[in-house]
Structure formats: C-alpha cells, structure tokens
Amino acid sequence: MLHILTKAPGSDAAQQMQQAVGCEDAVLLIEEGVQAALKPHWEGWQDYHSRIYLLAEDVSASGLGEMVDAHVFPTVDMNGFVSLTEHHLQTVTWY
Amino acid sequence: MSDVKIYRYLDSSKKIGLDPEGYLVEQSAWSKSVAELLASDEGLVLTDEHWELIDVVRDFYQRYEMAPAMRPLVKATKNALGEEKGTSIYLMTLFPGSPPKRIARLAGLPKPTNCL
Amino acid sequence: MTDSENLLVIIRHAPYSSNLLREGLDAALVAAAFGQPVDLLFLGQGIMALLKEQGSGAPGQKASLPTMDMLEMYDIENLWTSEASLAAIGVPSAALRDNVRLLEPEAMSAFMQQYSHILNF
Image 1 (cartoon, helix red, strand yellow):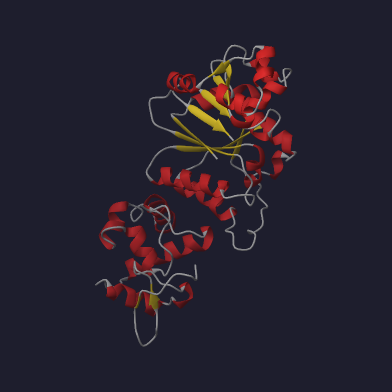
Image 2 (spheres, rainbow over the protein chains, first blue to last red; image 1 turned 90 degrees about the vertical axis):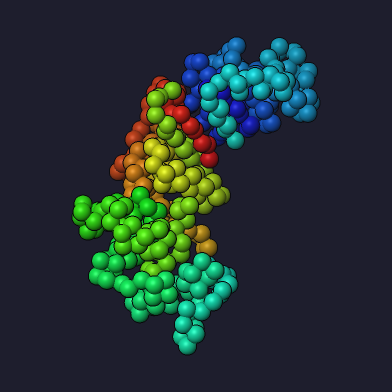
C-alpha cells in the first residue's frame, strides 16, 4: 500500500496515517507534507526509512531544497510518483 | 426542499404540485387520498398489500430521514411483514419496475437518494 | 488482497465541520446498495459520529444520527475505530454506539490490507 500525506507532520492527517502504515507500505510526502524536511527528528523518517519519499516538485515549490539536500532526504519526481503508484495495489491519500 | 419547482398539478382543484419526476413538491400535502390519486395517475389501484408496503416505507423515512433503496427496503419489509413478503420478487410484483422509487412517490416522500 | 471485492470507507471528519462525513456515508450506502461488502473505519474527529447521544443537526443540516442508525439496514454492520484515535480525542468507549469495534495499534495495518478498495474521507 502507498500512503500519500498532503499535510504537515504533527497534523491529524499525519497522525492518522502513522497509525495505518504497515511494514511493507511506502509513504510519499506531497504538498504540505514536504514540511517534514524541516523536522529531521520526525519519527516518520526513522519508522519508514528507505520507503519514504518527498515529491521533488513540491520541495522546490516550498523552497525546501537546501534542507532536503542537507539531510539527504530521498525525493521522487513526477515519474517516480507514477511508478510508486504502479508498484502498489492500493493508494490511500491522507489529507 | 422547498425550492423545487412545481412541474404539474396532480389534481388542479386541490393544487397538489408534482416535480418533473412525479414526486410531491410539498411532503405535507400527502394524505391517503392523495396516495390514491398518485396511484391512479400511474394506473395502479391500491390494495391492502400495497398499503402495508407504503407504511413500511413511511416508517423507514420517519426513523432514518431517507427513503430506502431496494436492499434496505427488502430488509425493512422482512422485519415488518415477515420472511414471505420480504423479498424483491414480492415487491416487484406489487410495484413493477423500481419498487423503492414507486413506493416513495406514493408515500409522498422524496426520491430515494441511493437508488440509481 | 482477499478473493472477494470489499470496501473500507475511512471517515476522519466530524459531523458538522464539513460535508465529508455525509459524503463518506453516502459512498458507503451506494456501494452497499449494490451489494458490495462495506466496513467503516472512524478516525480522529470522525469518531464524533459514533457518539450515541448526538443531537440533531445544525440549522439547515441533516442530523447524522438517523443515517448512522440506518447503516445496518444496508447491511453495514462493522463500524471500527482505533484505540489510539479514541485516546487522542478523549472519548470514553462507553460513550460510543454499541456495535463499534476497537482496533489495537498493532492491528491497524493488517486490518487495512484486507480490503480491495479504500476510500478516505
């Protein structure tokens, strides 16, 4: 399952998503979700290590590119977004 | 909804307004004799068997504020009138076509919303 | 994945804050009217719809309680919530309707995996 988070870490949507993410699920942070780049200690980075991504377009739109580079957070572009959705049977968006 | 436009009158002398699909514009205009008029408007003569189903739907609406689609209508009929009558075949026999829509119309209720 | 098609509708918004509760319930009712097995999961503010002592709606709005009561007529019998969400908003489980079932934190993800379709409201 792919979980897409459109709200900032700490939001209701983020907390609800965190209840639901399974150990084989991937997480994609888009829109306000990319604010996770401002919180390197957010538990999501640890919990979903190697299966959590930021959407590159939204990172640059939010001006968070430097933060992402500094912490080497993984990003995907639009093509990566599409292939993530193709690799998972289910996509659930938390907004 | 009170902003529904009257499309035609069921009975011009009593000014009972119907919407384009034949449902009462004012639910409060409903009475047993209005139900008889609505039925004859569609060429149906109401028997006791028809009436008890109209009552089932009116009770359902009273309780849940929505007219039932087919499945819950069958279930409500089963609960109220027993296994024998709580079948879609029985409902189709009395109200051929779409029982949920036809009964809701005769019961003076809005069209069932989950009934496509 | 399971062999049969089933639907989980997740409801995360309170009765009168938006139309999302209404829309979620409508989606569940439409699917159920077509005979699809449907379960509901209430998280966060959505839990407010599970309180058994709800009053009638704000002016101009339909109350959600009659619709919640109606779910069983559509054979929607399983209403779920999570212990974590319940604790987060501080609602005691005694205040909930009788047929609500609680998910423990470790059961959540496996629970979600068993559905072929998930709609999130």
